[in-house]
Structures are given as C-alpha cells and as structure tokens.
Length: 450
Image (cartoon, rainbow, N blue to C red; front, side, top):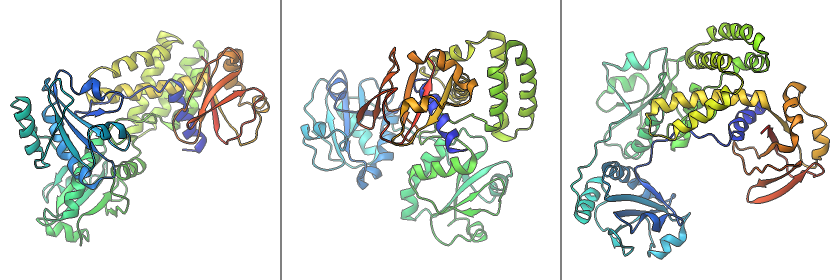
C-alpha cells in the first residue's frame, strides 16, 4: 500500500468521527485521576493495583491480576481496578504509594485503604478478596487460545498450505519460556478469529524428534510457517505483544490490534479500488453495469480478500436498492450496534462492513492533498486533486471539516466554521489556519464534506 493510500485509509475512518470498533470490556477497571473516587469508596469493595508500565514485577503480576479480574467480573459487590502511576501520579501519591506494584483494599464506602501483603498469585488474591469482601468466588479457568501441537497433529496443522502458522518450541523448565507465556497467550487471543492464522506451541522437551527436525537448539525458539514456505523460517523479531502483532499483520495480511480488534484497514481490498470509484460516482442507471464488473473482480480474489469482496457486493447491492443515503445511514446503525454487548465474531462482521462503507464515503465525498512546510494554503487550494473528487467539496467549502494529519493515523483536532477558517491541533498546540495562512510544519490535510 502506498503512503498516499495509507494516509487516505487512516483519514477516511477518522474523518467519519473515529468510528469505533467494538471491544470486549476489560475485567480490570482502569482507574484515573478523574474516575478514581467515582468508582472506589462507593457501594462496593475495591482491590486496586498501583503499578508502573516499566516495572518488571508489575509485568509478572499482570496475568495473575487479569485472572483475578476475570474471576470477579460477575461479582457486583466487588471492583478489581488498577492505576498507572506514571500517568496518574497524584492518585498514587495520595494513597502513599512508593513502590510497584502496590495493592490496596478499599472497603465499601471507604477511601481508607488496607495494604495487601500476600502472595502475588491469582489464588492468593482471590482468597484475600473473598475474605475482605464477604464473597465466595472461585478462580476462573481461562481457556487458552494457543494451539497445542503434538506429533499427531503437527503436520496436519503446521504444514497446511492454507494456513499461516507461528510455532513456539519451548521447554516446561525454561525460565524465558515462562516469561514469554502470558504475552504469547495474548498473541494467540488477538488472532483467534482469523481463519487462516494459527498461533501454536510444542513441548520440545517432550517431543525431541520434532524439535531436532526443525533445528531447535535453544528455548524458546519461534518459527513461522507461512502458506508459501512450509520449511519454516526463524522468527527473529521482538518479544513484546506489539512486535508479534505487527509481524503477523505484515506477514499474513491481517489487520488486528493487540486486543484482537480489527483496525480501520480491515476489510479494505485494494484490487477493488478502481471499480468502487466507478460505482460510487456512477448514475443510478450505470450502477448495474459497474456492479457486474465488481462481481467479476471479486471472482478473481482469494482467501480473506475473497470473503471481504463478498461484503463489497452486498453493500453495493444495498446501495442500489436503498439509495444514496444508505452508506451513511448504515454506518450510523453499525456504530450503535458496536456499542452494545455482542460476540467478537459479530463485532468483526460489523467492523468489516463499516470500514468498507467508510471507504466508499471517502471516495464519494472527500479528497486528500499533501503540503510541505512553508506552503500557503490559498495557493494549495488552487491545485486540488482530480475534479470528480473536488466538486462536492467546492460547493460547500464553507462548512467543510478540515483534519490535520501528522504522519500517525490519528486526527489531532478538527473544528467546523462557516468561513474557510479552522482551528486544528498540532500535538499539544493549536494553530489557526485560514485561506491566507502559511503552514509552518510539514503535514497532510484531509477535507471531508459535511
């Protein structure tokens, strides 16, 4: 994907007011300076972990604390929370936190904490909360998303030419393997809904023949078996969650974030871009002919692109049947549905459709142009992209929304005015921009008709 395309995909969804992906609620409540006393000291007891993101002991505690949150998620009388002390220093200072992690119990209706001094295991924490909160909760058994490999299923799964497979060769006694385990579990969980991706492990101490076959001499050893290379290739990347997620997205063509949610690029099929442009700009009479060409293009697709192509066809058919407002109305409906409690699979379906319709709206209504430092906005406005992308905007330039994009896929600030004057944010600063302004920082501007 070209840089221009990347910017357009990012701005497309952002220009539609950052349409959100559905997320499963975190069982550990994130506490901040703003919400701490609204959540803690109220009508339920609360166990709070005060931590720092860089703290090794905190990282080691994290999977145990998540099990604790999972165990108490249905206990209405108990809150399991955490505070990032790097972000919210005043809260941590107020409650006497001087080391990490610090775990404190706040009784119902009280902001006077009792420090937890027990073991940092899920079992010990559950027992403590039960004693303090008068509950009788059992520790939750969280099913693993990592596929366990053995000699019986290794070839069937790993050598499947239709699957991309990441394999960890580990030994149960290996300290580095134990440290990697919670991260690797999160990687598997993030991609568990991807039909063509498998995240697996093999006990190489127990199954030495397989380990030797693939030249495993140390633990953990990670190998990637893509669809096109079943001999396997060494994984030499980082071992943080972000590293693994970025690697799989790049190698497998997926679009997941670290929580397993689809990103705003998910579902977009670049091979269909030309025919989509034809479709959204065609007259009602012409749309049927373009739809037929879209069907032909979808027939050429394979794998996940083929599945996404079918969504394009369904959306195009609905556009023809329900009129020009269908895409915008359907996006709003999908937003409402994504805010409800729905299954992860259903959230994926809705997000894919939303992303595709957002792309169509972008092509139909918006345009993008890049600027360099020192260029004048008024001069740039006289050198706009091709007319078919500009006409809708020119008719209503006075009520357009301007988005400032700094190279990262995020909108910093946008403001609509009745004249060609905008207030946009650059980092933590604000910049007044009108048709005579000189742009002093290199960036790109994306404009969407309101």
